[in-house]
Image 1 (cartoon, rainbow, N blue to C red):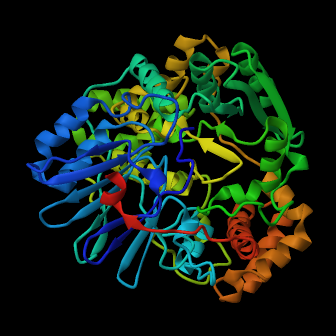
Image 2 (image 1 turned 45 degrees about the vertical axis):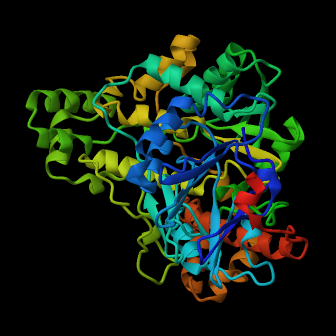
Length: 576
C-alpha cells in the first residue's frame, strides 16, 4: 500500500498563512501561475514508482485552464482525475480561501482541530490530540455502539474532527471552517462491462500498491475475497503476494468454506495459512498494542491480528475484499422494483421481478406485493440493533445526505452506505504493523459499480455478475460461482461467554456506563440472553465492547506516548 511514511502536519493561522511542520513533506507536484487565481500543492507518498500515472500532465493543464472558476471547481477536477493516495491543498489568491482535499476514498485520513485562532491538520491524530487529557466525544462513541457507524466528520475525541470520505475542508481567510462534498461517483449512462472492471482494478492496484509492499490476502472462500485473490495474483508475483490467510471455526456451520479457500489458493498458486478463530476469540484481549485513530470493529480481533502478524510478519498489507457485496449488490432486495415501477417500464419491471423471485426462492405475487406496498421492513431478518435493549435514549441520526443529487434512492443510499463504511476503515495508519487495503473501495471501482444498473448485476442463479465474470475471465475459478448466502458468525457469542467475567468488568467499569449512557439492568439482561445464544444481543454487546477497548487502549497508551516535536515554517519558504 502506498502510504505517507511520516506524518504530514500543517497549520493555518487567522491571517491565512499556511505553515508546515516538516521539510520532508515537500509536495511532488507544485503549480503556481501568477496569471491564474489558484495555487495548489499535491502531496503523494514517496515511492520508487513514477507518479505520472497518478497525476498526468493533462490533468494539470485542465486545472490551469479552469481554475478561474475557483477552488471548489479545481478540487472537483482533481478528485475525479487523480488516482491513488494523495493530499491536495488549494489556495485562492484573491480571497484567501483554502480547500484541503484528501483522496476521496480515504487512502489517507486528515484529522484537524481549531483552537486559539489556529487550525492544525495532520495525517496523524497524535499531532492534533491533547495528550494531557483525553476528552471523549460521547455522541461518537454512543452512535458507534448503537449502529457501528458514527456521525460524519467526527472522531472519538471531543473537538477533534476528520475529513469525511469524498469531502474537503473549506477554510476562509478568517478561519470559518466547513466540510463540503467534493466527490461523488459520476453517472454517465454508459453500462460498464467485465472488461472495464478488469482494467479499473489493474489500474487501482498499479497506483495504490507500492511494488516493495508485501501483500497478504484475507481469503474467506466467498465471492468477494476469491475475486480479489484472482485480481492480485494476476497483477503481482509471488515475491509481492505469496500468502493468503483463512479464518475458520470447527464449531461454525460454515466450516466447509475451508475447502473453498483451499481451492482458490491452489488455483492462484499461493500459500494458505489457516487460523482457527476459536483460539483467538473476541475479548480474549482487552487492550491493543497500538492505539488506532479510528474506532472500528478491529478492536474485537486484537488476538487474531497478532496471530496474523506472527504468521506472515510485520509491515505486511492485509488485502480484503470488503465492500464488494455492497457495491455489486449481493442478494439484491425487492425494493429495487419500486424505482422500476416509477419508471413505468412495466415489461422490464415484471422481468426483473421474476428474476428476483427465482433468485430469492420466492413467489412472483409475493415479490410484487412487497414492492407495491413498500413493506420492505416486514421482511427484514434482523431487527435494528439500535432499537434493542440497553439504550435508554432515542435513536441517533448519524448520517448526512451531503446534498447528493442522485435521482434514484438506491444510488443515494448506496453512496451513503459506502461513505459510512469508508469512515470506519483504517487503511493508512501511521506506524501500524498490519496495514489494510480494500481494492473494491477505490474511486474507479465505485464509479463502475454506480454505472452498472442493478437489474444487470444478477440473474436467476447468481448476484454480483460483473465481479464474478471479471474474475472468471482472468482465471476460470469455479468457486467464484458459489451461491451467495447470509453469514452467521458465532465467534462473538463464544468470545463473550468465554470471557464473561472480564467482559462484564470492561462494560460496567467503562466510559459509557460511568456516564449513565447505558442501562445497567437492561445490559445484564442482554448478557444473560447471549448465554442462551442470542446473536442480536451478541452483536449489540460486541459493539459496546469495541468502544470500551478503544477507550482502554488510548487511556493506557497515552502514558507511554511522547508527542512528536513539531517546528512549523511558512510553506513558501520550504518550497523555495
